[in-house]
Image 1 (tube, rainbow, N blue to C red):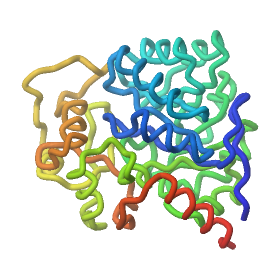
Image 2: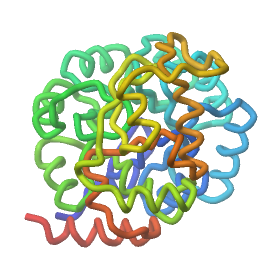
Image 3: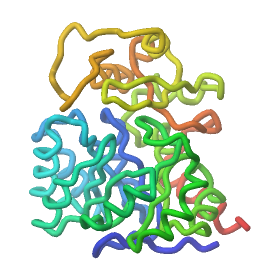
Length: 314
């Protein structure tokens, strides 16, 4: 199959691939711009960033590409509205929001004409999103990494959700190969979102030790933890995540980064430690199929591989 274009609002991606917004700081300007330069949609992970840092990353990405650049932000973040406003002020192309659901964000997008793209996991929320003004929807299944909103496979959701709404549906979770993209499109999706494949690529802002840890992971190493956000999350087993699964690891200091926090551990600091290469005391979020990735490729190599696989797919 020749991959179709993906249109969100007035933005058209030549290749229907959106790179997942992986926090903390795995998805920064370099990765987002590389994806945009290949014709996809690049996302900067804004969670955990200050307004000034976000401005810097958006401006840097703009200097590296003329392609489509968006942000991903956790609705659960206390400064959610401020981050969205900052990105909109910088002329961001779209806002992708997950780890919760906010009706208010659609108003922010409407004021500026910025496409708002919520991450949902059900027909009900997809319909509500469209009614509130979503320009597109990321439909995330159980295979996704990070915070999860369902225990159902995206393959069991995509046909029903795509039939229920008229806006583009971007399928997320377990998409690693060209055949996966073709499957999702045939089931009704307009495109796909891929996180794990880009987490371990050359342009990812993950420390080398974290990328190596991804490549060494085995299926039995992939676990579910309970996040302070109030949702389950998929991660690679580390000494830290093993401790979290046994019971709370209360933070010694709290930055009050979430609107509501379970305080079983500090997620921002744990994810930051992992991003910096501390896989002993860090939280390593991942998709279910990360163990299938055995090589660190460039974004260009990944896109060339995906396009060739899609062309050969049935």
